[in-house]
Length: 514
Image (cartoon, rainbow, N blue to C red; front, side, top):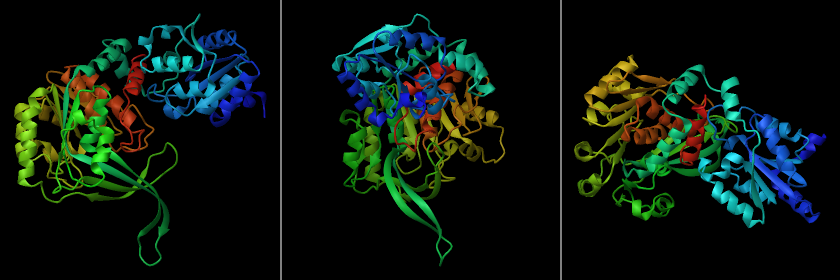
């Protein structure tokens, strides 16, 4: 083992090593970060930190948890760890498999925890975690020092010289940055917290059954597999609720579920009682979509083999529909924004559609086509207006009844037909087109190429873009917001977790530094 390799400690055993050093009377200093591109500012910072104690430990955020925008980190865990370990002033390096510094601090328990001088003002921390970090340092008897005789930015250097994003994205972001600085971007996203939002739509649970394919059976030509594990995730309107809840706490959910033994306990995990407008009835089967999935390795896209839907074939009973209508009509005027996610699974019947069209103060609409409703839940047939809406390629083609379309022309025509302020066409790995009244269409390429799972990415896009549209932000900005959310979502298995406001802020501010 080389001296450089010896400096890199496994996270699982590092804490014991630091405990032993403290018993020897050593004063441990800690620096934490991504350290994606080692530059003079880093070296000065680390050398200043080393002078404050006997041992300098540098903890590094693992690549899976880095939220600095597409293509980041530019250097993988191995390269970042070895680069730091090669510095004479660094005694130990630990890779931290967690998104925040909290676990790193708990691992090291430093006598001195060093941050850049810019963090002396806690408002400069877009994650909002710095207060908890400082409390944790102090709880272990440590203190915080702010250093920075020379300040550089890895993000600016990488964006300027290494081009981690396509040229089209760079040009789009550069144009946007002329009007919206990173700080202004953050102010806008923070302002979403003032909005009061109602989510109306089908609650869906996505059950992922992970299997190992064993081959074809000997007697029939069918695929044989062995079940490895299962997990059930929130989907549909409940996923959109969880996304928007990251930006404002004033968000309620109105939907329809059954009375299965597990449903209330599960809903309580995600929806506060004060925000729960759900109708529960034994005559309705809670929608569960089970996907049998073969994993393709860490960080690679899942291979979905087969799906089974647990869903009622008929609409909800008339008395249930009446109860939903009464509930919605009683509250719909109390919100700034009503977000409708119509998956065509029974909740949104014609009377519900007419009600949201007539009485929603601001209506954001997503009317989806899927295997259960293909050809029957077309936005142009089901709705007459919306203040903003989002479609994908297939949904647009069905709405105009043509396979070959001019995407910008047709989405613009639908915008005019619905008298909408904004609309978006999400085209997966190709592009997203945003259109608005009296504006030329804008086109933004995907911000993320490392796909794990596309399920829920469109919902994430729509959820965040709708918040921006309600605040009458320019179409180029709302399209950018939605793409940031979608870029996060494709790195998450299904709807295992909602998108992160912190991650969106970091990614957006990074891209606006291009």
